[in-house]
Figure (cartoon, rainbow, N blue to C red):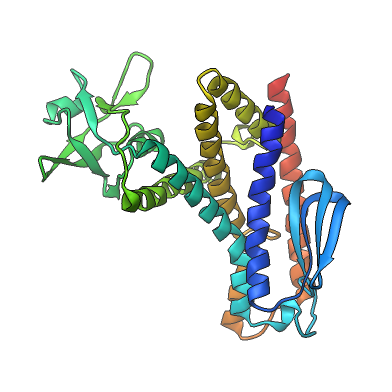
Length: 342
């Protein structure tokens, strides 16, 4: 069952990403040659209004093939015949649609469960928070100037700034207070502020569903960016990354544990995975790396600055080189995933 769910989640994520490219291409009157789900040989195919819609053998990946996308083609309806801004909107639509999917999944969860503000249930004896006068019922609103909306953001901040002194702003009875907290190590070596967050959820009205859905997506985007920062600074390595095999393993573990509780728990936790993967896919695709949407956006921005398009053949060579490097990275990540299973 978990394999089927994994394939379904991957397919939905890719389909929604490519749907963004597809819809903006159609909106800008660009000829879409094929819109497909999957890779490899076609299993099902139908042509309608000049576009072939296909389902292919391998369930991972997908494509939105546009006329003249990677060549100097000035033919009417080709990708290259449109303005830089039109082309930029088409390329950016894929990642943006991933964020939209994460937003919709977040809205479903928050409408069902509610939201989790950073409310203190208690403070721990002997830690800085208690010494600085914080108490149960306080609502943390900022940490070193960073706005806090969700309880998980407090833990995320500590995860990436564990031993650093932090200035906390919090609200109590409608008034705002501040305290400078110094994390202290517990017996396991973990740095703690000495606060216990209330795990309960607050029921949300329609406006709060929209508001906290945006905060939820922002949380996952921040988490992805902070994790990338660890990679760039060398505090994490390729071995810490997870590829498709690792993600399938995560889905399997989550499904197994959730199924012991209820079908509703399975539904909610699978939606959480959709949010995580969709936000992650959106961020990764916007990175300025050749072959990714972000790399293509860089070339379009350069075109806007220069006033003329960079030679498509040279751009294609850069993207091809980037694709080869990404494939090599994926091979390493896949190898690490497999080794973790052994």
